[in-house]
Image 1 (cartoon, rainbow, N blue to C red):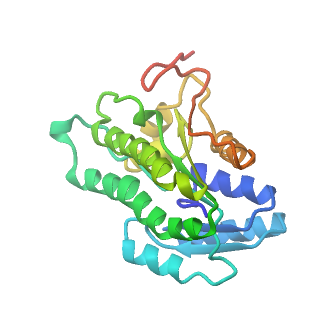
Image 2 (cartoon, rainbow, N blue to C red):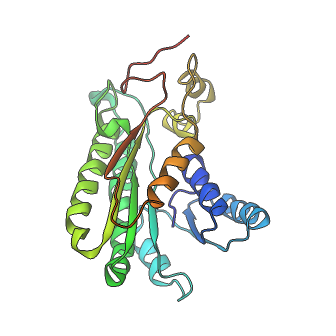
Length: 247
């Protein structure tokens, strides 16, 4: 099950896991994109795909979708908590409350809602793997990143807490934290300003969604007694959240 599967890392994970023969539950808010992705995968790979159209911020819809899964789909082996976003790049005293609330509700509460709905089934089966997509912003705070960085620091803490709480049930928990990835991330952050978004990636080669998806897939292939707790993946041209080598 992959949340936020309509673009970027989530979409790349869907394509990567389909190529490995996994049945997929894909979730997102843009149902047309979900349906198109389902068709693309089913036409390319012999795997079954189920799409669930909901916003992770809405706990009622999350629970209704997951509790309503049929027997064929309810045993979720891998959960990729990918849904998340950054909005705005403003100093704290000028930040948008609406942006703050959407980031907190998506990046923290949405991750919690989905995990709370899926984890009991893993616990009952004594197996499962939860992968949380974090960020370099969960390791370092950068100028004007205040609330977004806070939400990703929360993902880091939650990943550690999940690992402790689920340890005795045989459930693996991994956090994968990318640096700069060229997806819709910056376009969303700048509220659709394409030019400003493209400027973020000028002068160096950023990661692509498939680079991260390859790492996500890799950690699921390890023997059951092996777990990657925490992994930071960066472009070669990036040393920290705000330090890049640009040509």
